[in-house]
Image (cartoon, rainbow over all chains, first blue to last red):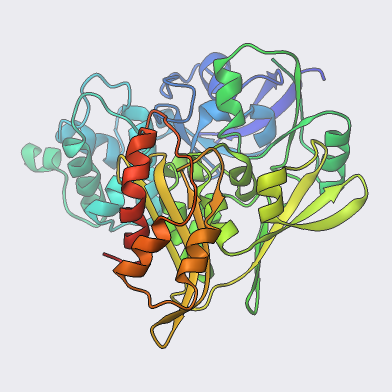
Length: 167
Length: 265
């Protein structure tokens, strides 16, 4: 079967690509669209570094032939910030030192974003469950959990640590 | 390598693709890991994502799960709350948003915890085969398999009575880990005695095990530690070694986890 034209609503914009049968969603994001936030870690669905949102839900993009999601909505880490202004989850990761080498960070933030979109007031346990498929070898996870809970509080009206520092 | 991916919009078209030699792709959480990792011959896939095989139906006590329903969809459905512990024990949210009900029936052990639960619930499969649609007990499929051109379209079972379904999974981590021992059971207790029991073990052996010896010990007996200890000795199980645990360890801890599953302590 020849390559096919695939249409995605990618970070809010209609985008097209010509995809071979073996092209994964991750391949398309990184190699066709130049969106290198999502990383190829294990390519087994085990590390979560390729996590993006597919129709609003977090998925491991390394395991999806992109032709099977033609017409879907895809959101990646690159779509979160407004220009140079980070969104609240990204800012909370900065404020709480939740990123070190940064390899897991885009996937971690997309899993956290999906959680907060569904559960604006998550418990610590719910945060832990939401990121259980995202492996981090640097932080020990505690700063990440703290950052996600802080982002949730911010969405409910509590200022982020950085905002307090600016005051 | 993958030389084609079909995305049919009906079960019949998907079945026709299987008959022409394509391999079914559900959520891809097992098959795609192989394709990402290993060189292989030419492979034609047929994706079931758009084949109209998703959805959950509850009609009285009869539950019907479309074959391509995701594990996340099960998790979100309050009518299936008795399966929540099982589903949430499987992999992670980004995997459960892809992984499908029927896909879980065919992954190798120590995965397939939902299959253990569905076997304990005595599920049946709707299958589209060369001779048309038919229904097969899951138990028969687990032991005998299906033809390569058979397409599972749905899974059906009777919802368990309240508190009658037990699921317990021991793993190396509390979340996102393959099974060391999985116990899934449908059990009713009347006047302190076991009235009905169907017991399935996952994670222990090469295949899911219906623990019929343990069922015989339990049936009609008082549900207590002594009975459960005897039940744990009643089946000839050949535990496996893998990266999660040794066969020795699995054999050693199985009685403990059977007790925890059935008695909660």
